[in-house]
Length: 212
Length: 171
Image 1 (tube, rainbow over the protein chains, first blue to last red):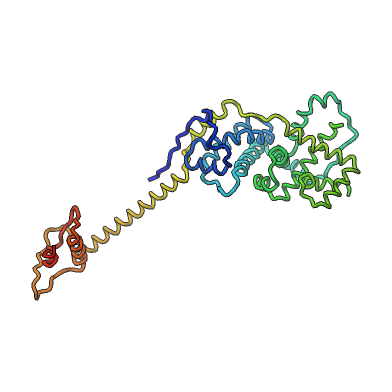
Image 2 (image 1 turned 120 degrees about the vertical axis):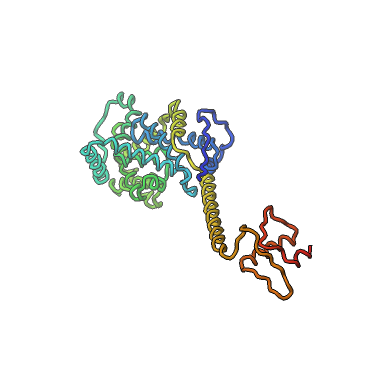
C-alpha cells in the first residue's frame, strides 16, 4: 500500500514573501523542497529561471523555444529532485539538464540526415582546422559597425559551432569554472579547454575586423 | 614565442591558468605583436559586450504555465513519503510472516492440542499419579499460570485445563 504524499501546489504566481529562503544556499532550499515546503521549489524557480533562459537562448538562438525548454528543465527537476545527490552542486545539476535539452534541440532541428551530417562535419572541422589569424586589411563601414555592434556580437556567438558555443556561453556569460563546464557537458577538462580556445579564436576572428 | 603558440594556449592565459613564467612570456608577446594584441582586445571586448547585454526575461505567464505543467504531471514522491511507504511495506511483510508462522504453529500443534475444541479432560492431581500433559499444553499452561499469579488477565483466555491446585491456593 503506497503512502505517496500528494504535494499541494500553491499558485506560483502568488508573490513570494521575502524571508524564509533569503541567504540560504541552494542545498538548503533543495532540502526544504524535499521535505514538502512548497515555497522552496518556487524559490528555486525564481533563482534559476532567468539564468537558464539566457543560457539556453544563447545556445539555440530561439527565445520562444528557449522558454519552453526552461519549463521542461523545471519539470524534470521537480520530478527527479529526490534523486539529486545533495552532496553535489545543485547549479551544476540543473545546468546539465538545461545543456542536454539545448543540445537535443539543436540535433532535432537537423531532421535531414544530410543536414545532420553537415553539422557534424562542421563541428569536426572546427575542432581540427588550424587556428586562424585575423585579417587586418578589412575596414568595414563605421556607421554599420556602430549601429550593429550588439547584433554583431550576438551573431558572432550564433555562428560558433554548437559544441563551442555551449562552452563559450557557460564560461563567458555564466562564469562557470572549467570543472563545472566539464561536468555539465560531459567532457573532460582537456576537451573543454580545447573547445573554449577555439571558440574564442573564432569569436575574435569575426569581431576583430570590426574594431579600430 | 610566436603567434600560434600564443593563441594555442590563449584560454589558459586569459583564465589565469599559466605559471608565472609562461604568463610573462605571453604579456611580452602581446606587447610586441600587433596582430595578437588586436586578437586579445577583440575577445575581451566582445565578451564584455555580451555580458553587458540586457538579460532576456521570462514572459509574464511563465510561472502560470509551469504550474499547469507540474499539476498535470505525475505526483512527486518526497523522500519522507518514500520512507513511509518503505516502512509500511516492511511492516506489512512482517505482519504476513508473523501470521504465517502463527498459522503454521497452530496447524503443527493441532494433533496434540485443541485450543478451543471443547473442554479438555480434567486433570486431577494425586499425590501418586503424574499429571498427564502434552508438551504443548504444558508451555501454554505455565504461561497462563504466570499471568494468573500476577493478577493480570487476558480479555479472552481459554483454559486448556483447570489451574493446578497449588497455583489456585496461592492467590
